[in-house]
Structures are given as structure tokens and as C-alpha cells.
Image (tube, rainbow over all chains, first blue to last red; front, side, top):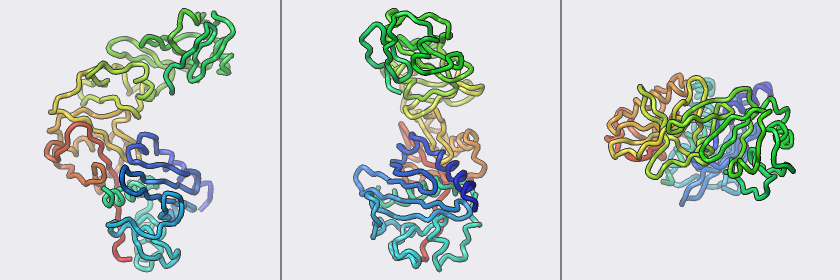
Length: 145
Length: 236
């Protein structure tokens, strides 16, 4: 995909995030310059989680999503009771815990989901970059309430 | 935007977020804008804010800094001004939108009251910090203070990643309102094409949209999240 087109799609999606929305969700944005959207989900009492979306070729390809500790180091454990979205096993390609949800590159490249093509989800309402982040926030939120 | 900054000398005055020493007590607005590097002055709409009143000034207007002490100027690169009322007093702003935070620094709501946008055929919208007021063709005309509602009414805001409804703050509706009705208004306002598969949550907890707010146990100030459900996983 042409970089300029991918950047335009990225900027359109990320540009929708305003201060009010970020504050409501408790999102602290670390970086939002193409191709990286790096965000911390904050919580009054629970340990924060940080996600780094690497969006090269968005939206021809879904973002690669790294699960990090707040300081930017790779997390080695999925959030407790996180269900199936935050998968605590090693991804065959990265060797790290990963996001197992449609819309994450690691999901679509996992041997268990090779038949679930990104093309079937791409462009659907709510499957934009912030939509994916809000879905991960909701999944995480269930674990730390 | 910060509130008015203290300026001690007769030759100092605040424009936007800067206090500038103009070296003179009486100037034209053009001279003041030029000194503030807001040029060319003719391309700006300049509004004096003082004593909870706003007044549109032209570039040729003469301005006495001592006489207008206690106020500040807001200059906008804009080709038109927008009129509205606050508790039936005429006001003006130099651009199409205004942050609610800035509105509240100029017009603090009377104790026990909210600022409300009233429309005859629509639920009231309550201004809330973080929101944005629009003065365009379909925007705000009249803002009035109203006492806090009784327990039979709730104030609801719907957050989506495509925008927030209402942009200005919160919608004030009876607690007997079906949640889906508010979501439908949000979808229309935010031009959301297909939300049939979306889920609505409050602080991450899923809510049944066919219920009323009362039935869902929702009272007071309510912030809803609305978006596509997470999908996939479980087999990897």
C-alpha cells in the first residue's frame, strides 16, 4: 500500500480522538505519529496496560499490536482474567503474548485463524483504529473493574 | 485557554493568552493586534470580554486600556462573528465553535444551575467541561441557566470513536427514556451508518439498550460507551 495513503487513513482515524474522549476512557497517548499509535490505559487502582499499534500498510493490513508494560517494556503476562482477547501464550511469529482479536495482525496471522481474513472486517463500522482500541479497552476494563 | 491574566500596568492588556505591554494607554484595535503579531488586523474578529459581556470590535475602534481594565480581548482569524444569547443577554464570538471550558470561564453557572441549550422539539443539552459549542447555521442560539433537574431526569453523554453526542455536553432526558432512543439520536448526529451490531456499555459494563435508563439502574450523570464489539479469539 502506498505510504501516503496509509498515512492519510491513519491520520483520519487518530485525528478523531479529542481530549474529552481520551479523558473519558482514561487513555494517555504516548505517540500518535504515523505509523505508531501508542497508548496507556490508565486506572485508578489497577496496573495500567500499554498498547502500541504499528500501522504500516493500514488499512490494507490490520495493525500489529504490542502488549506493553507502562514503561514500554514488553509485557510477559496477559492481564489476569482477561479472557481470550489478551492471549498469554507465545505467538508463533513474535514469541510474545498477543492480542487475539479480529483487527489485530497477530490474530489474522495466527495458524488458528488463517481462514479469518482481514478483508472480511476491513472498513466495517467501528473497525477503525480507535474502534479497535476501544474494543481492547472494553476487554481490559472487564478485568480490572 | 486560560482565564484572564493579571496585568498590573495601565499599558498592559491581554489578547488571547498573552499579556502585552503596548507602551500606551489608548490605541486602536489595529495597533493592538499588530503589536500582538496578529496581522493583518483586518482578517481578525476581535471580541472584548469583560464583566460577563462580549462586544465585537472593529480594527478602527479606539480602545482605552484603563477604561476596559478587568477584561481581555479574544482575536480570531475569521471572516465573520457569531451571535448568541446567555440568559437572554446578547453575546458574540469570533469563530464558529467555542470550547465549553472557555465558556465556563466567562459565564460561570449560577449556584445550583446548569447551562442548558433548549430546543422546543428536542431534549435539552447541558453544557459540560470538555464539550464544544457550535454557533453555525444549525448550532446554538440561546443558552439559559436552569436548576439542576430532579431525580426523574438524567444527563447522558454517548462516547463513540467517531465523536461524542452531544458535542456540547450531556443530553437531559427523563429516566423513563429508552436507551436506544438516545443512541438513535447519537447515530443521526454523528452520521453513523450502521450500528446494528454495536454494544453499549457504561464503564465497560454492557447495558441493554431496549431498557429505559431507570430499568437499567442508571441515574444522575451517565456516560455511555458505544461501539463495535470485540470479536475473535478463543482458539489460539
